[in-house]
Image (cartoon, rainbow, N blue to C red; front, side, top):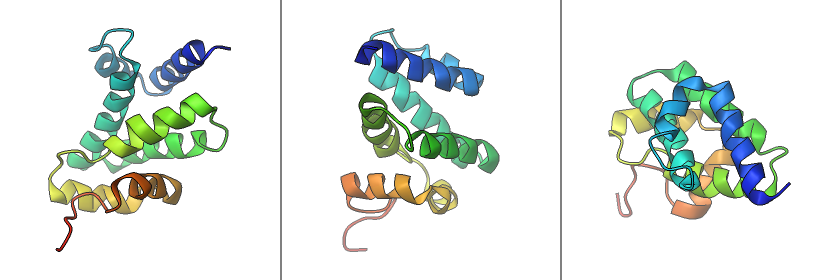
Length: 124
């Protein structure tokens, strides 16, 4: 399977498991696969902003489990376009609610890139 078809299958799997995310992904052109994955991260972040812990956890747990058997391209999309994008421009209360619920493997990916927890600033 080519990376392109493997990636499309991954995005389709997300749409199948979480139909509410499909319309968010569909806002982007078909070739904008990175933006589609970022929309999944946005949906996760918005769930915590809306205090919808169950939905946020269902997204995080899916991604965390997917890492156990992800292909290289799936792992890249999880790391770069999902995890690195989590909690972007959220109020601190949403970050405080969601961050402790992020599974350890995903927290590590986040910290490996950002070097600091979401909402934290150096020197504070």
